[in-house]
Length: 360
Image (cartoon, one colour):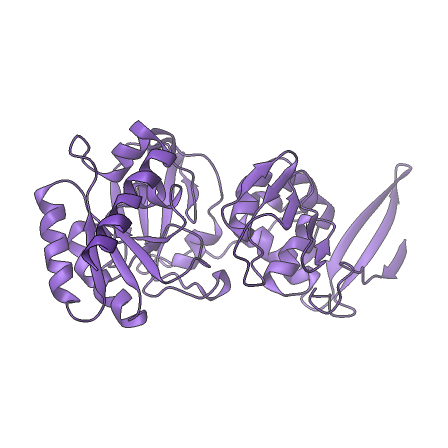
């Protein structure tokens, strides 16, 4: 058996591109049946990391992984074009990722990498082993366990939120198909033959993804029944990219409504998860971002209008707060999104800007 220490370079721009700490893993080559099998072992933690398996499985379903790593982007030919998460990037175009491999290049800074693992190293500013482990944690389907691994079950009286989140993956779900939205920052958990959409809730908006802390979860089943793990009072779901500008923050009621708006607008969008929680969330956002403009994207019913009135009263004098309701024939913005599409919904919100300009 041949054993060699390895420390592969990531890219050309060493000043802004993270590199692996020395001696963190061994590349082990074994001859089996005439074939050379390469495996990688983490020396520091003793954890098996199969880099080639991660790369192979990434190629089977790359887009959800790219959205998770760098946020919403657009597809141009073979490339995924998004904002560079490591700099104050305002316009898509220079930062491009090869969808099939995860190879990336930024024409503005010359940051580059040759695989999805390199991309994770770049995004999280970490070494290669940590990047691979983060990918496996976010997307368990990327990992192949060569040995039997005993999972520590959650306590019966106190279900571990992190345990559930680690066991969830990026996947399709019937609720998403019916609502015609992508999964965004949520995941799917399959338990006892049932598929549950798992929506993470927090109490503050982080400056980047690595600072995000899960305080509670909402589960949505295939039959659209919903329930919370821990109290959701004052908590919210971030439905857009974490790095969006905090100048304008849109607060809606539910997850699907928030995702509809996030897919249509270039704003930071959060979901309060219920009309009764809108005022609590609005207060928290006003405290965290006193200079922000808050837009309440309320539902077209009495509960939605009452919720806006209550939220407006709660933050009166603290921040600018405006309400916008869907067109009268729709109950909420997801209904409108499904009927008219993202471009029409974007134009509908632009009316609000014109009204605000006229009132100034």
